[in-house]
Amino acid sequence: VIRPAELIQRKRDGEELDGEQIAELVLGYSRGEVPDYQLAAFCMAVYFQGLSSAETFALTDAMVRSGETIDLGAELGRRVVDKHSTGGVGDKTTLAVGPIVAACGVPFGKMSGRGLGHTGGTLDKLESIPGFRVELSTDEFVSQVRDVGLAIVGQTADLVPADKKLYALRDVTATVENVSLIAASIMSKKIAAGAEAIVLDVKVGDGAFMKTLADARVLAETMLALGERAGRKVVCVLTDMDQPLGRAVGNALEVREAVATVRGEGPPDLAELVLDASAHLLALSDLGVDRTEARRRAEQAVADGSALAAYERWVRAQGGEPDESALPKAPFVQEVFAPQGGHVQRLAALPVGTAALHLGAGRTEKDAPIDHAVGVVCLKKRGDAVDEGEPLAEIHARDEQSANEAAVAFGAAYELGDDPPRARPIILDTLG
Ligand code: URA
Image (cartoon, rainbow, N blue to C red; front, side):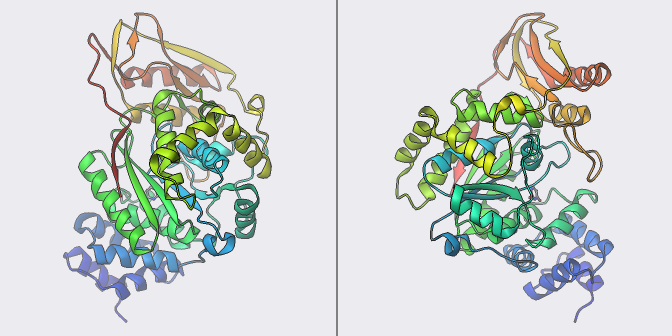
């Protein structure tokens, strides 16, 4: 047996480790036999030296093997679908895609995460719905996908425990932003949770972990290769995260916007991404339809109200109250006004996410409680015309002081100028 210190040293010096050595480290860490400080040093060595494809496969395999795996296809006799985002600001896509896909008769089963840094998490958004239970057992998860056609839950304790530990460690050791570590983290969870067809939304830009299209493409290709090797059908969409997705940022505000999108009344960028992802999932499913027919069915489910009915059925099945009037509202709403007229040149996602975080929509400490009612609504987005003194955004706060602080942060998020900027589409590329 080679000691962890020796493996760390080899990686530090740029050598390639074999699959067994990687498994030894990761499984040893998961069992509590290798300490945090050695894995932290290993992750930093990986951050600087990178991992080969063979090493990334081995890491992903070891993470999957650290816990239980679910075979949804065998349990249901259907091809279950799933989607995942690499994380962004205002990303409530899953909350609308799930009901649309389920309404089209395709089972959707997903394990989601909580917010990380300035990015939001689907579980936190769902918990703004009164009564909603995100912690289902594996058996409850499988039966709900079977009976209701849709379940979105937290990662159960037994599923990829190595990722739970490793993710928390990376979050506090500046080792999140490595392609191999992100790809292994996401794909180990997707592989273990059992869906056979997966759409991965790789965010690119200011508010994403991948800041450039080139880096995002490498991440997408790495995840595609991991999915293919595990026998899953995977499509990656590279999407814009230079500005927040949609208008709402903050948990209950985002649930409202997702429901509006399910009803066909969502903001255009969000609605396009939701329909695109839904169409990919339907085309990868066992319905046997092509992309054009898949898109038509997704649009139909929105137009005829069946997607909204699927949303209500799903929320009730997980103990929640689907009526929007039950969602919490912030007591204090303040508008931010345009200091000049013209066009929005830029609305930077990172300061918007950070403002929402400081209002209480996210955590600055592990396991801290969050305020589901607070957040921001970006009334104007990139390219929109604006008059001097017109409202740019609404701040939903617990009190006046936190609203004032968030208003200052907004000054940095909006860049106004005379001419409209060059249009940038929401979907930048599709791979796989
Ligand atoms: N999301 C994950 O699940 N893992 C990462 O490493 C980054 C984003």
